Amino acid sequence: MRRSRITAYVTSLLLAVGVALTGAATAQASGTVAATGYVALGDSYSSGVGAGSYISSSGDCLRSTKAYPYLWAAAHSPSSFDFTACSGARTGDVLANQLGPLSSSTGLVSLSIGGNDAGFADVMTTCVLQSDSGCLSRIATAKAYVDSTLPGQLDSVYSAISSKAPAAHVVVLGYPRFYKLGATCLGLSDTKRAAINGAADYLDSAIAKRAADHGFTFGDVRSTFTGHELCSGSAWLHSLNLLNITESYHPTAAGHSGGYLPVFTSAA
Image (cartoon, rainbow, N blue to C red; front, side):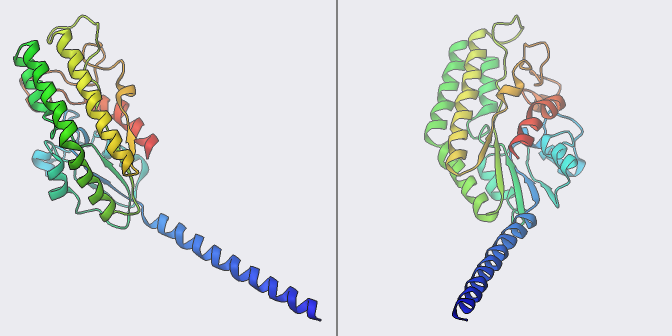
């Protein structure tokens, strides 16, 4: 009789523990299921400048239906999709204008940011218009900024994302190298092209480190763009376009579908 009571007690205890654990797992699973919204943040490399097919309501932000966030959302049908990436955005713009849709129901966030803070547009203008030495000097200034100031700015953005969307998986996308080296190509000198590629690597390394320190996933697009740089004969980037200067040095629609989308899909 005593053994039966002990057996019954142990059985009840195990059952209670099992129910508790199952309940906790169910609650965790339901929380995961609930956090299924997707928010796309960032600069022109996320909004889709250069891809065409711009959404008229996006105005100067130039959000494209051919940009990788839009393509991913169309293919995966998240419970909600908020596309706030904007042409010309810097870290401060993301903090001030793009984080509104983030919430506890956000399950996925994509982001490319840092290039404008580091002076991307001015670097390219300088390298196009000035000598090799002028180009190298401007790139050195940009690298110094990446070392001294950009990490703190990225930290502010990444921390804000984590605070507003604690359940989200965050994928930080980098930037491609611009030029295929060693190829015959009109335009910038080999010295400038190599230096610009080196600057892209330098920026990507800094962004990847900050992303990792925040527990985010870094999406490296340099591999998918290899063979499709400027001067490759099959470029997924616009070269200098005086008729539409905004699209210069930005990914084409093929750059988004073939360069960015596979990396983001794998990381997401």
